[in-house]
Image 1 (tube, rainbow, N blue to C red):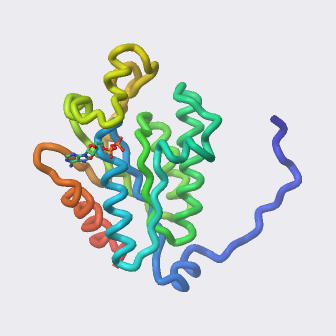
Image 2 (image 1 turned 60 degrees about the vertical axis):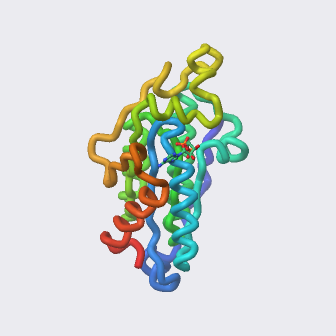
Image 3 (image 1 turned 180 degrees about the horizontal axis):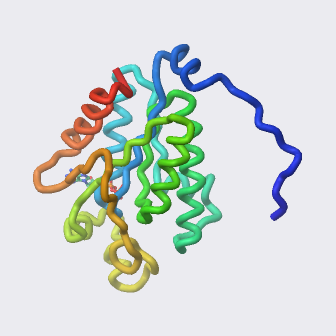
Amino acid sequence: MTKATNITWHANLTHEERATLRKQKGVTVWLTGLSASGKSTIACALEQTLLARGLNSYRLDGDNIRFGLNKDLGFSEADRNENIRRISEVAKLFSDSCCVTLTSFISPYKADRQFARELHEKENLPFVEVYVDVPIEVAEQRDPKGLYKKAREGLIKEFTGISAPYEAPDKPEIHLKNHAGVSIEDAAQQIVDYLVEKGYIN
Ligand code: ADP
């Protein structure tokens, strides 16, 4: 692939100018965790809550993005890196447009999440890493798509937690234990409380 050369960055409004006009700041809430830990369910609940509060919010979902933007990518380490690189860039654009951007991707590698964080922080866009934490036994028991079963049978290669690593965050902004009596509403509310406390949303 030849890289474009004759391109020039066209200056936009600053994020502050846009946020003042939109009366809303942008922030990316990055959910990471094992498959079936509850990322998509929590992100959906959160999106509904935020929209109901009159805020602009949008969810970028792991599987959904692979139907379109990332349909050329698989699950090798290189493809997972590229998957996250593209999502990070898209999330940054959504946040820059003053959206509360929710991403629900396993994003198992620390380096990829660090890349996403730096991309945002370079532009002074807040990045909130949420570790949706459940023991693998709980995720495997939920297994709504039967993926763990297939992975155990060897039918899915490179499955996170079984045959591919999950690198848990060391210092996530929010460590969400999403099991043992924690409801989806509780989990979403913890994130809302954090966003309010930090002044990212009103
Ligand atoms: P992920 O996006 O991380 O793969 P999902 O959001 O699809 O996970 O959730 C996997 C399953 O776990 C779903 O059936 C969902 O209803 C269930 N689930 C999620 N959070 C909870 C919770 N706090 N308590 C019980 N079940 C949950």
